[in-house]
Image 1 (tube, rainbow, N blue to C red):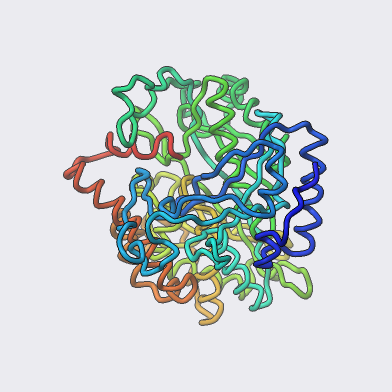
Image 2: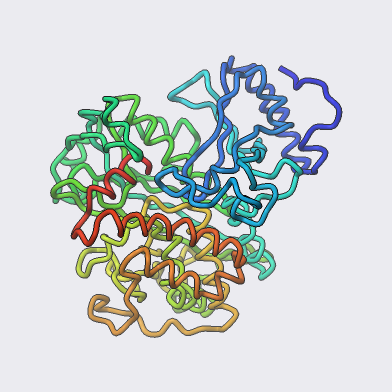
Length: 488
């Protein structure tokens, strides 16, 4: 189905596609016809890494790829409760920007390279989009663009970014979706669920077998999407699983994470289950989930792993590692962006509680993997939660690592007893992380002060609501369950 003839399209007028993207758009046109699609979803990852978008009938999709799909700028002003936390109907919309005033439109511009047919909705296509204002100017709050900026800074230093995902989450049987009108509060009442297996038998085959029929639904869907799935594992806690993915370059791994979370949640719900990437649901006897980010740098000229050294981690890798440690508190608002994620940082729990590194040690924040001379030597940062926005998580790693390289920083000795090491503690809560982010000049330089202030404002509103509504309650609260359980 060819695109409608028009004058100059929005994409052409503002030079928003490369020649390769224009070529791939023509392939998408053909694929829509070939697969007999009825609808195409246009989506972008918002400030929280949550997909938002619109669904167009297939006959409109080719033109929409080239002319964009409008969305409301208030979406960029919302916290995790979906409430606007900026005065959007005042002059400048609370941003001192006329483009953000009055709930005006911005435009989603499809990236044709991301096109997929959804296996769980086979008459539907899916396109990941970038966002610009209606005048063609970039939206400074686009997290995918902020990821690109970090990669560009890394490229100027002579490196590319390679990262692999190791994502833990919970998979439950959905018992009560809470669809009574009285449950439709804002945020809504959390769904009621039951377990698919008991826990505390880490990597035992019998426990995995209890989950397999449900997990296979997700696995087949993820593989059919073409995501580079590597393994499916049963985790320590009840109804807890882990999916790992092969390393990918640049933005690809972040795009994979965004689509994986959406796919898992949609596939689960369609089949009577609930997948939650909330770090620690407010249910008895559960374990926290983490998102471990495996990462290395590739020399652009030689294509060699810049972290591989004759004695293990190279000197440059050590400088990068030192940057991660130095900026761990400031980056926490990106790696662990919810109130709930900080409930995971406990000593002797296979999760970090301080900014420290070690060689093949699962108690540290940053784990060095690779023997001397190993071409696959890399770092595993174990600090993240699975609800993190992947573009911001990865960008924070790049900026922190580049700062460590620029300063030729020393990471210090390996911590063989990480929970006893004399090292700075990680932020104790989201409020402390926001304060550290605001004060971190590395991230103000990398992301830009305007973006840091924007993001900190949104996360502060979230934390303030939590502090007010829970009034000092201990443990994982009902507030967190409503806020995060089915959002992530």
